[in-house]
Image 1 (cartoon, rainbow, N blue to C red):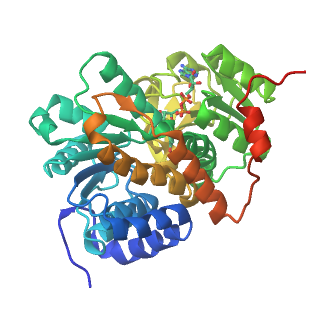
Image 2: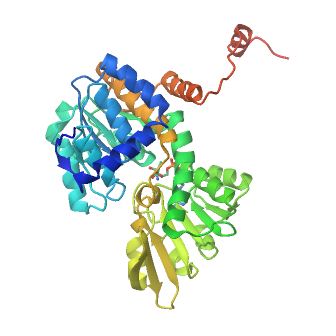
Image 3: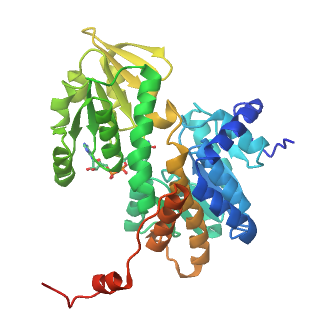
Length: 422
Ligand SMILES: NC(=O)c1ccc[n+]([C@@H]2O[C@H](COP(=O)([O-])OP(=O)(O)OC[C@H]3O[C@@H](n4cnc5c(N)ncnc54)[C@H](O)[C@@H]3O)[C@@H](O)[C@H]2O)c1
């Protein structure tokens, strides 16, 4: 039986479809299932008030169900105006009793109203994807900070913001940088963003990638994934970087590397994954070919200078879902996907559940860890201890039916000694 517990969603009638899809994702999340089973008997989060600002997807729903099973009193809001899956938001409210404030396509005012609604819950713990809850707490809702035991942060951009808060001496409570776990960034950022960004470009445009020139901006964890998946589909990949080591890595991985302004004239498809601002700026926009497609998969929608694009265009029209065509005075057309918001979550479904299984295992075990260690933690940015990280990898391998070797006592001694040489 459905019960309504509040929140703000597009249409509660979508909940049945949302529930089916949440259950579908659950099948691909065996590690989180194991954690949920333990949480349901141990109740490590009992009575903890949590506010989560996350992409409202089927995978996030499974995380929320796990946290609730562990005893958390949880509310959710969206971490991006375009990433919400409305059927999932409806199901969270009516099928799982988790108040959710999220509507796909909400304007900025509604987005922040929803963040504030999640904070009205007076959380003891925050869970962010991009640091919007933490930054709102530290600016306009400072009265709530005394309630907070700890926070958790999912993504690279959020961790960068937290480090700058810590450096400026303004961070008021400990936060776990979930992104820094190996079982998060090595898989979610690389394979998840790699596959789902290409998936979103194909879903929204239906173009053939084989034989096209794809320019990937940034060769970090996400960029490596996007480049390798585009290459796998037969694209000629160009990488741009500002970091010499990463640029060198891209060269040795077999890609062409050059300044963005040179790549601009060559590319058919452009994808930004830098976490930086105005990476595709006016000089690049001016050089693009007729028919160019531009997408962003970095956290914020400021990697492409959209105001510049708007001012350069003489005409703008929506030609397909998530595709805006900008026409220049000379007749060239440039296509911006998903309004420059992270394309994989806006124009597709985000990362496949199998990879979010590990990211969200980190979130669930991380929230337990932060509570257990609350007394000794300072207002700093922490990472999850590597034994928990390794345990998540071990559980994932086990779920995949893959066995690995273990060190013999002789090897263990050898690897921990300095005496043996040639
Ligand atoms: N779409 C998603 O689902 C998703 C998933 C994970 C992370 N992210 C986001 O993607 C972004 C990248 O994350 P990451 O983990 O790959 O970060 P990262 O730090 O590993 O990589 C970013 C790379 O961009 C490069 N860079 C910075 N400015 C640049 C510029 N002007 N031109 C070219 N290269 C530049 C950096 O040198 C770095 O190598 C972040 O905003 C992160 O939050 C999105």
